[in-house]
Amino acid sequence: MSLIINIRPHGKLKLTDLLDISTQFRASWPSNEKPGVYVFLDSDKLVSYIGKASHNIGSRLSARFDVKWNSKTAESSDCKYITTIPLPINVGFEAPAIEEYLLEMLNTKHNVIANS
Image 1: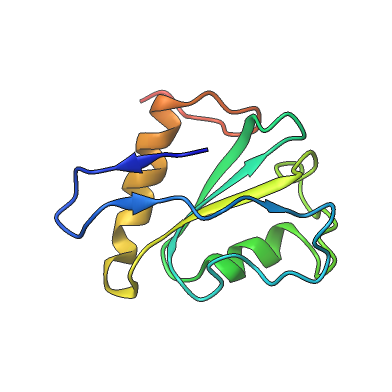
Image 2: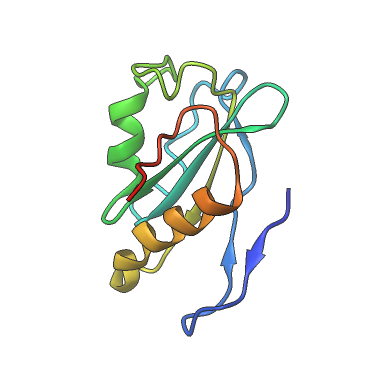
């Protein structure tokens, strides 16, 4: 999967490599201490959920999984792969905008977008 967004003054956004949580039980949270966006993919590598972390991706993932990658929420229930878009700490405020942009571009199984 290769997605690069080149519309920001702070450089290109890049997805991290896919983490297969069904085989990498001891892996730490991807982009653990960075703000950014995280993406859950199902076994067919279809995007099932997109979330944001304005301060720390690791803390958001720990709310959705236990330390052995067992799901704790409906959004993470069919997740097999995780990728992230880490941001520099000083631009964590961009995470909500990137999440919203991706949600407008992609259909997900678990995100709910309110009509305004």
